[in-house]
Structure formats: structure tokens, C-alpha cells
View 1 (cartoon, rainbow, N blue to C red):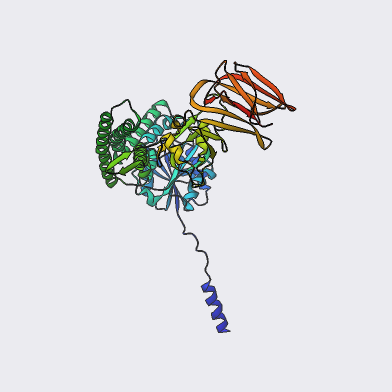
View 2: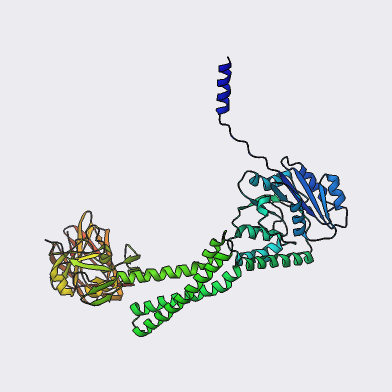
Length: 564
């Protein structure tokens, strides 16, 4: 039996039970100055909170019955002989209590409830945060909106509380040892700033609506002065004035320098009207400025980091330095682009950056992609066995108004248009004869805007399909873009099969073929139409002038060849 008891005791001792949370003593400090009407009610509400161990009312030199009312309500009272200010009252209570958690609550709140008090203290009891400050609905807040928030946003942009001057807050006592208590109304914002800079966890808790006495204009003026003084003093203490003033100036000047470098590079590579020497001078001046002021920024920042507690300083640093960082990134991207376009051959360094072309059609030119980014294209040799084909990127086809399986005639020789191979979306593969005729060589890089110039005067037989077969082919010549283009629409047996835009020469005759043989012709006039029948098929061509632009100039001979 004894052995059995020993085993039971041993097993019970070995069971792991969850360790109970260590008890934390909570004290509530209520600063009061001539608050005989409300202090007892506030004390009574706080007494209802089960985990509050101690209530201290700091009577800050009141001339009414505040002290007596607080004692009658059951609070411990500590009195100042004369009024010292809210900050001094809080600090007096803070020094007197022996506890783990302290809550500071104003004595003039009419509608305080135990749930509001609990909402302040519970996040600290549960270990979620070190400090809680409250936000609530109220009719005032003028000092907050007109004074505190603008200054905090300027000097401490990482602080974004809705009500930095809430008045009610709670904290661990050991944390408050690190914070400097202001003697006046600056105490609230001082605690918020210190906690932020020191990296102390602080949470804003919504406690609903609060009703208390409205401050007079003279009191608001005093409060505003004390809040401004506290924020400015903290900004000086924590180096934010240096960050905004000195470092801010160096950052702005470094951005000017970086912008000059970027401007100089653009003039060197893309602006023909500005002499090369001017672009080089602009870049050199900007580079010297940028290097000088960036060094200044780095030195000042390092000194500041060494002297000032870091906490959340990094977030402010990022916000202040962000414009300079973006400028540096833009410059590095430009330089990397230029280096990527550098070629060194036979002792000669050549830098030929090629930008992609943003194409925006502002007219009603029929186009599957009214906005697209195209090119540049790299020239390469045709694939073996494809001496009669041109492999062309889809973007290039779109620019030239052609499609796969169209035929393009270069120097009178026909070449079929084919799609690019997988992984070669920007490669233009040309047979040797085509390269020779167009004066191009493998590895040449051409911009999308040069395609029309390179293929100018080449004629194209372009197919339009209907019911899975070719309905007709149109023939045009690639030319410079012209604003006087017209649109024509083709109806086959009263069904619209295609429409196209191109340039017609007024009063000129255009041939219509059927199955490869000449059938009829028409004289083009604006808004003229052409209708004919062929072996039971009705064909109609309707023209209209839309003031569109096009690079397609239709040829007179074999303008259209119908497959009927």
C-alpha cells in the first residue's frame, strides 16, 4: 500500500500544470483640481473594478471640497499646498505608489464606467502592450487638431494616433521610469513621444464617449502653449529638428544633384538639340553635388543615430530619406540601362540605348491594341530553309498593319510573314537578301518607330478571312503616316466580312480582281461606294472619310482580289 501511495504522489508531482499568471498590483491615480462635483463619482466607479488594488487622488491645491469628497468616497488623498499642474500631480502619485501597473484618470469625467477603466488596463494585464492611451468621442479636441497633430506629423511622422492628448492612460510602472514627466498639460504628449522614440509598445484603446467640463479659451491657450513647448523640446532632444532642418536640406540638395545627373544623361543620349558638351557638363555638376550632399546626409545620419535612442526612429528616417532613395534608384536604373546597351569592339566603346515605344492611337484607326508598348527589335538571320520567309514579332506586325501569312514584296521579291519562335518575342529574322536590300545586319537593334522607315515602299498582300477561308486580299504599300486616310467596309452577300483603313488617291482608278483575274474597277471619290455581282455572290464596298491616319497606301493595280 505504501508503494502504491508513493507512485501516486510521484505521478501527481510529475504532471505539468499551467503556471498561474503572476499577480500584478494595479493602482489608479486621479489628479484633481477643484473637482468637488465629480471626483467622488469617479472614485466610486474605479472602486467597482475588481482588479484595482489602490486609488489615489492627488489634490493639486484645490480651493473647494475636492479633498473631503475624495476621502469620503474611499480614496487615499495626497495634497499639494498650491496648484502645480497636471504633470506634477501625476508624478506625485507615481512616486507614492508601490505597484506593477498604474492608470491615470481625470477627475472631471461625468460618464465614466467600470468597463471604460477595464478597457484601459486589461491589455497591459494580459501582456499585449506596455502602455495604453485612450481615444474617445468628445465635443472638444481643438488643441489636438490645431496644434498637437500638425507638429507631431512634422517632427514625428511615425506617430499617427487619433488623440495623442487623450488624458487617460495606463502603463507598467517600470516602463514609466524611462519617461520624463512634464509638469503641466504637456505630460500626455510627452509620454506618447518618449514611448515612440524609445521603442516602447503603446496601444490606443477606444473607450467610447466621454463627457467632461469644456475648457475655457484661456485654459486652451495655456494648454496649447504647454503642448507646443513639449513637442518642440522633444524634437530638439531627439534630433528631429536636425533631421528636418539640416538633414532635410542636404537631402533636398542631393536630389537636385541627382536630378541634374539624370537630366544630363537624357540630353546626351536622347536630345539632339543640346550639344554633347552641355549634357556632359550638366551631368558632372550634378554628380559632384549629389556625392557631396549624400556624404553630408550619411555623416549627419550616423552622428544622429549614435546620439539618440533609436526605437521607432528608423521609420521617420525612411520617410525623410525616401525622396532621395527614389532618385538614387531611378539614376541606377538609367545607368544600368546604358551599360546594358554598351558594346566594346575593336577598341571602340559604343553605347546605344534603345527605349521601348509607347504606342497610343488617338484616332479611330482599327487596331486591336489602342495602347501598347513595342520594340525595340533585334535583327537576326533567317532560319535555315526559310529563305522565303520573314519571322516578325506581333508588335511589329501591328505597327506595319500586316498579319501572319501575308506576303510582303521587297525589291520585287515575295516573302511570307511568319510568327516568331518561342522565346524570341522581339527578334526580327530576315533572309540575307532582305537584310541586304534593307541595309540591315544581324545584331542591329531598331526601334519600333523606325520600322515604317525601313520597310517604306514595300508592298504587302494582306488577307481577310471569312468562314475559315480567305474572303479577299488587299494590296497596299507601306508609306509615311498620312492624316487623309479613309475607311472601307466589305459586305459579301449582305454580311460584313472586314473593314480596313488606308490612303486612297482621289479621282484615281482602282482594280478589283476575282480569283486572281481582273474583273472590274472603280474611280475613288470620298464617300463613294462600289457594288457588283459575281456568279450569285453580291459584293459591296462602302467608303467613308473619317480623318484617320494610316501608313497603308493602297495600290491601283489589284487593289482587291476576291476569292469567290
